[in-house]
Amino acid sequence: MNGLPTGRFAPSPTGDLHFGSLVAAVASFLDARSRNGRWLIRVEDLDPPREVEGAAERQLAVLERYGMVPDESPVYQSHSRKQHDAAIANLLDRGLAFPCACSRKQLPESGIYPGTCRNGIPAGLAARSVRFRTNHSVVDFVDQVFAKQTQLPAEQTGDFIIRRGDGLIAYQLAVVVDDAAAGITDIVRGADLLDSTGRQILLQRALDLPMPTYVHLPLVVDPNGRKLSKSDSDDPVANMVPRQALALALSVLGHPPPTDRQDIHSIWSWALANWNRARIPRGPVVVQTGRIEGYTRNVP
Ligand SMILES: [Zn+2]
Image 1 (cartoon, rainbow, N blue to C red):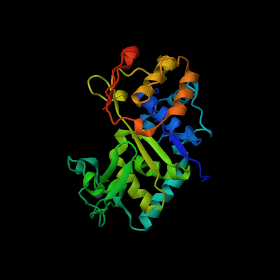
Image 2: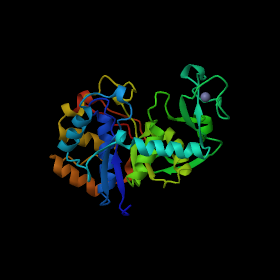
Image 3: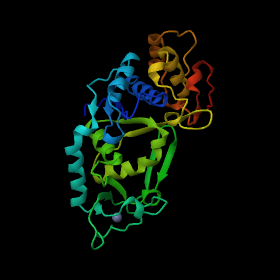
Image 4: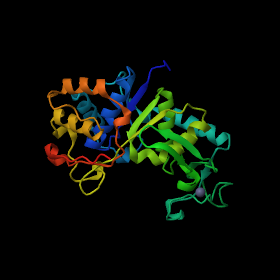
């Protein structure tokens, strides 16, 4: 777009900001701003039934309290429905996607699509969802933390859904269209999305969109190994002391601030000067947010 590195944080408004999301926000913010780049926020509100009233606004308020203010007003993914539908129509027109009549119950337990409707919907059935045709394309990319990745979406998921049976747009399609529209050059996000990156790169290729750089962050887990966002010990960030939570987030990211940095501004200035992707561990990193002072780190 304007040649500047551009990163984004993309929260889902399904609850309060939790510590795992704070780590992603901090990393994406530092990765862009340490290179004098732009940092944006996109609220991923694609799934209204899962949304919690007011959650997006509360999450944005917490980020602001931490000093993370985006270069443009936050955008809401649901406002891009026209662009999402246009991309799906484009793929359908070119035979790169196809209507599917299968219900979840008709799919094998593996979740891998067996190709039932790939060559047309079986007689007597009606289209429900739209799937992207994966063929046998191998996707190679270099993640900046997890190194070289080789993914074969045809074997991981098979032809995958881009518009759901309930009419909602699938994450894989929306994330690709919206990142390209915003000129995102660097995607910094949790490692739980690493496996889906190959599907997103296939969509970028099919839609002739540029491929951003990928930086996947270590998963943050509780002492029982559960992902923090799904864990009972996951206190909302709003309940934490910002200085402590920021220092902990940086420690998770391999950048523990020097102990003489005692206020949030001096921690940020240290972090901006010292941010280095090569220091990010692959994790997973064990954190007990309920006892924020007594955390343990598990950095390989
Ligand atoms: Zn089908």
